[in-house]
Image: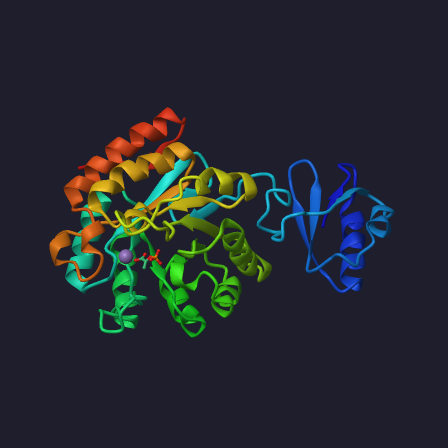
Amino acid sequence: MIIVMQSSSTPEDTQRVIDRVEALGYQARPDTGEERTVIGVIGDDRPIDPDQIRSLQGVDKVMPILAPYKLASRDFRPKNTIIKVLESTFGGTEIPVMAGPCSVEDRDSTFAIAETLQSFGVKILRGGAFKPRTSPYSFQGLGEPGLQILAEVRERYGMAVVTEVMTSEEVGLCDEYVDILQIGTRNMQNYRLLEAVGKTRTPVLLKRGMSGTIEELLLAAEYILAGGNEQVMICERGIRTYETATRSTFDVNAVPVLKLLTHLPVIVDPSHATGRRDLVDPISRAAVAAGADGLIIEVHADPAAAISDGAQSLPPEQFAELLKSVDRVAQAVDRSLDLATVTA
Ligand code: PEP
Ligand code: MN
């Protein structure tokens, strides 16, 4: 349930409500907005009698949150959550673009692609150091040396970095090096991992499981939020359907549906959603037209030589064209891509 305080209520009134909720054995999450304070009750609150809370001083309304996720719900927080990552802001008017290779392959190529992307105005570099590969015989990533390369890029170019963390044991390690922790599609329902990133205060990019429903995705986000980490971004990266013409099926519906259901920023990954370089530009445009708050795109200096996901990686020149065409769509929906102004 959520408890809405009267606009005239005092901090003492709020504290009294929190104390009561906690005495009943629940966690209370106050959220002080511009107009009023809302207190989220965490846990299975069905046994609480709403009248008992309603009668407390300063309480305006007690409302059930019907969705099974609470903290992720727009009912709990009507305004968009804004997440700041170095120079970028997710959830506002501007649309950040995260770009880079699927895998961190080596130091030189990572520095080179970072420099190229920065020259296009990109502020966040993506790159996997721990790779969840379908086959155990495929390249599994460089591991910690890959994280060190990302950290060096961060230092050298001032770009933020995002990387995937695959196990709860590795959360602390990854958290030391990067600005955004990515949870991959294969791990959306790895609850111990979700709890582990929930204990950090680092922004999390939570990808939709390839067979995950929107409700399951938001419940996965709830695990992270319930742990106290409020900085969660939801990522639509394509789902598995009967269609084989593309690697996954981009669920464009998910974008406006998520925007209605949650206050969290909604990101789209058109690279994994299609698996095809020629579709990344049109699907990025569709994503932005549908209301996406960010994009994450695979770019490689020489896609044919990429160790992973070359078929869906864009060469830099094509990515530069994409930025222009997607920005036109962003402008049409009163937004813009969040790119740094580059002085040549
Ligand atoms: C990736 O970002 O390279 C990746 C493995 O993504 P996903 O988990 O969406 O397949
Ligand atoms: Mn990839």
